Length: 94
Image (cartoon, rainbow, N blue to C red; front, side):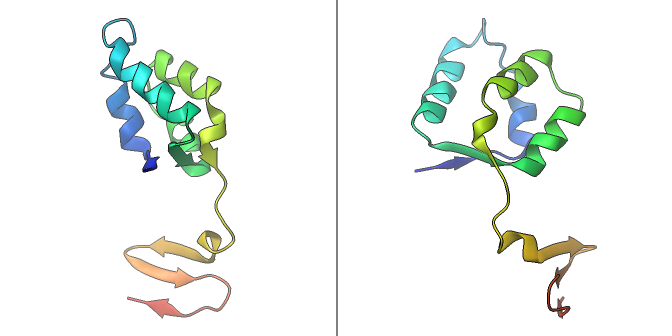
């Protein structure tokens, strides 16, 4: 099983200080080392520019390999106001 972290997942991690909750961080590090924890580049940008705890930012800086660029197929869609636009063709699905 692969776990996908979004921005809110990293916000929640800010509640688990590594010195107070070592088992949480050990499990997260194990998932990363096994290739079972992933995220996307857009989440990285949001977390880096958001109001996050320094220890989470330090961990992210050491684990940037989990933040994947979008695939070609994922770049074809953009959500605006609850409407999905297919970028290369121009159709709209409400």
